[in-house]
Amino acid sequence: MIRIAVIILLSLVSACQSYAPPSSNTNVLPANWSLSGKLGYRGSESGSATITWRYADSNHLINLSGPFGSYATQIAGNASNLSIRTDEVLMTGPAEIIMLEQLGWSTPIDAWPFWLNGEAAPDKPATNYQRTSSQVSFTQDGTHVQLDRFRVVDGYTLAHRIICERDGQRLTLLVSSWNLGV
Image 1 (cartoon, helix red, strand yellow):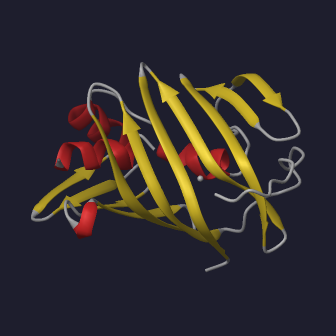
Image 2 (cartoon, one colour):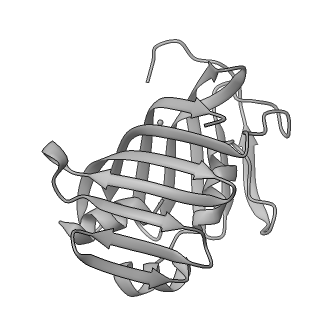
């Protein structure tokens, strides 16, 4: 179960009313934000976890837990130095290496703040970019990213469901709440 929690965390959004996704480059998130919700994973194994994710000044603090707080996992740091703590187990190092060692694949953790904003990360090219009245999707660094269920939060139009697919594995983040500028 710890492996599933790590997969869910690293691979790395619900109301009836919807809003159009933001138009490109007009909806930049603040430097500090947090979200909470549910994270689901499907691949060779599957599972789900409750997630709280705090992002401040390019650093991530992600807490995952299973039912009733079981299988607690904490991920902290950035792409160059990430630590994963599960009970008494601690792994530290570059995010890409840790994910490859633990999962057999990786997700670009520093791209997620851009992806959550409905934009591709600026350091790598994106393809198949599509924006409709209710959805944004694109492919970047081997991952297909789809965002929908947009709502206005503190003046920002934010997705409340993000689906990322890569190499037959699917990660779905359902955001129940956003806190901006924290």
